[in-house]
Length: 83
Image 1: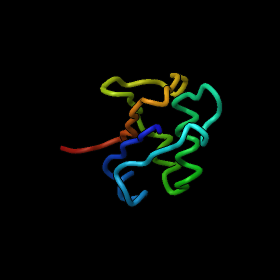
Image 2: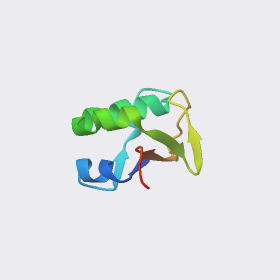
Image 3: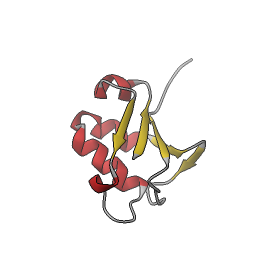
Image 4: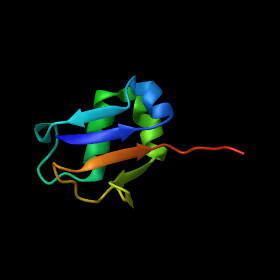
């Protein structure tokens, strides 16, 4: 299972803070971009937010072309503002 942690507005839009994807939901040798596409296919309301978000595996920010292993835990981190 690939676990995706959602934060801030993404949690509200998906109605949960964690989503799990089965390796069978993804293509062979998936990338973070493949995970993002599968996530937004399941939760279309996340599409515009996912396009602006940063992605992390563990505590490291990664790009969309980064390979994903089935034991990885990803985080979708939407942009935040504050002051």
